[in-house]
Length: 170
Ligand code: FES
Image (cartoon, rainbow, N blue to C red; front, side, top):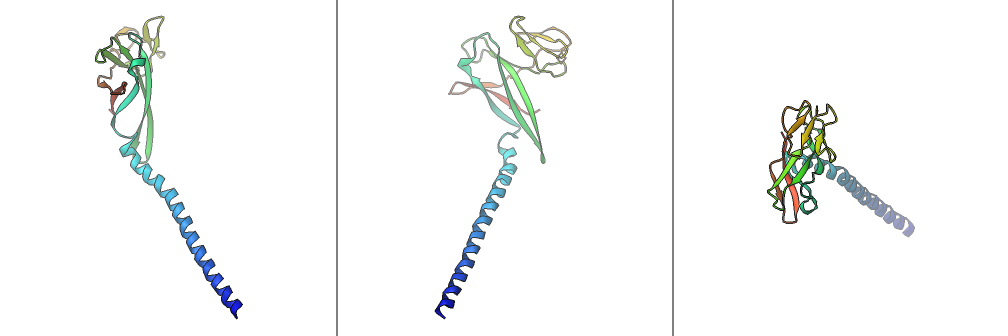
């Protein structure tokens, strides 16, 4: 008699244990699925999908005066559930110690959009696609490009000495 009662209590406590365990496992699975899903939904609005942002390029002190400093960054555009990554890049040219005395070129060729490279021996930006050539001042020196290199005109140096450019999705 007392054995049966003992077994019954064990049975109940086992059921309770299973209920509690199931509840905990269910909660953990819910968190594991729910948190990333919510983060995914919020991410475009608050992070990489933002249509405009200040982009850190590098330590201003590390950029040598008169020497093009190459940089690149990636932005993610979100259209509904579709995400598209786009790479951007350019060259910072410091002219003096004064941060405002700086020019930042977009490395996108103004002909058909290939990426130009700085060739120190030629002292020119060369486009590999159709031999477009730009001077260190961005002006066209040869080839089919119809206009000088575009510039990132909105930039700042933070208190930590980091050069940032203002990116706006066009
Ligand atoms: S894309 Fe650069 S020269 Fe054509």
